Image (cartoon, rainbow, N blue to C red):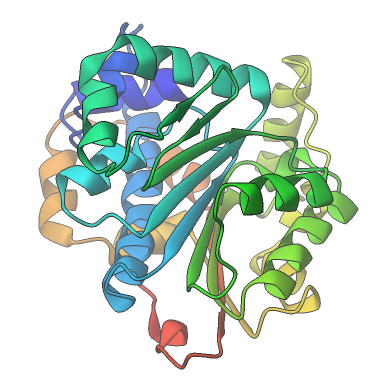
Length: 302
């Protein structure tokens, strides 16, 4: 994923000044429809995330589940949009790699130190904890362990909370992902969950996607919840979320600021318009809300 994003940013689809410190190589050329797909994903997720941060005026926390080498913290710090605290969770091996990059590269560590007020910055191989940013090594399938680790690093269940997962739940069994989504609904009374992943996977194009991933030894354990936009929404509604919406990425792409869409469409000639359409129709953003504080979270949309 990071190589694809690195290539798209190198072509000018969007700016990401931190990613180069995690992924040095731009890699080989990627097809224009792939670049546009990643553009839609990044812009779509950021649009909802930023709307939540503005709605709560930053009086909130963000939990990025399966964050990998995500650079959201540095973007938000640059744009002065940081929440009270941003948590990232991923497998300990992934976290160790990310923390190593941060430790050894001042352009990554300085922004963390700049918003940290005390001497107590914790920097170990599998955990980084500062006032505004925390990276934790944990297995999302172990919900009690996840809960314990987050609370140890000052997770506040009373704060409005945004949870984010991108192509993460699909690698968990339906019961495992439902447990995680249910835990979030039970833990936070005012919250939003943004999930980006596959959809419409029962048609021929979806089957080919699954077969291609299986050939690369990537089994989609949770693919049955990716059959439709309705099945995506159902997962959240059954787990105790008050409201759920879902759009395929073709729809999201049409709702993005069209002047910027026109700009990126000029970057590379796209021969295969139909292929782009098929790709975008097989990914979606689903977002669910609970809003005991009546902040108007249900109005957040494209």
